[in-house]
Image 1 (cartoon, rainbow, N blue to C red):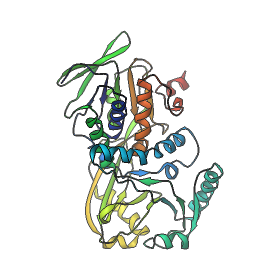
Image 2 (tube, rainbow, N blue to C red):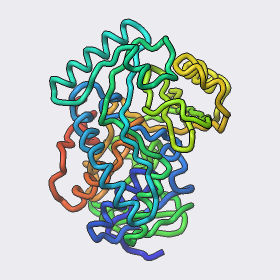
Image 3 (cartoon, one colour):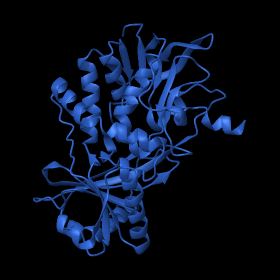
Image 4 (cartoon, helix red, strand yellow):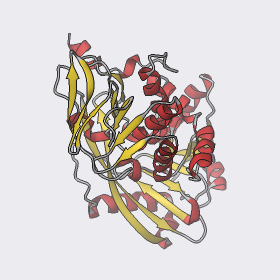
Length: 374
């Protein structure tokens, strides 16, 4: 391992990969470290939904961030394919946010009105209209908000695509390399200490997902994050049950190529336990059966769990550490890690380059919670 780099990235998931890729495009000499295997945590477990409008209904800093990141995927898909041959499986067939109850229907119709008045694409589909598009849906579905621009990718393929593209551009990647401490001098980062020795750099980026807070040095600016476990399962059918992604309260169904259907996800906060439980999967099965009854005839494939990084206010942390110059943080993306990966890579690269960011990131600063206390 060479001893000095322009930038060191701690974390080998989708956001670490995106940051490495964007920095490499700027000609930086980059080292990326992962304490385990690449893309084996939340990045590999995610469903890959690009749910900018389905997840984030109201306008705000995160909504603007998500929309801009969603728009980056078509070009990124081409770049990654050209560099690596990896297909991130970008699908742009829209997303259905469905209602089961009268209250949900009223709420979604309001959101359609809010988003269309704001210039976004969204439309309400009646029960007959949505079932004509997706015949496998049950009569329990009252209607749906259809979002044409929301789509999906393969989360594992996107994560590996970023990492392989970064490597193709010269990024050095080391698995099974754990950061044990950060090195500082006069309030500036100078490098890191790992289980394989020390490495020097004036720019260190922490992108360790739910484990980021454990990595960061103890200071007066602690992250207010916590892990959230999510369990998922997948099945296979000879003919696809769905063409578009179905997003509902407590359950989503994402059709993948080859007749795969991915169903997720449970929500269990404050645990790093990745055990797949009977209770978690059975609850998802019941919800999925209510929405798509014919799923009972599908072939079982597998089940898994991932740990997502959540923050107390639901906003990610993106920026430079206020106490240590040259130390940057990109974490807390929760269920939007895949969606926000492209813009995260661009933002951190701009910050390292001391250039203006493409969007206002003041809402995502690390010190936002301590400022409120003061």
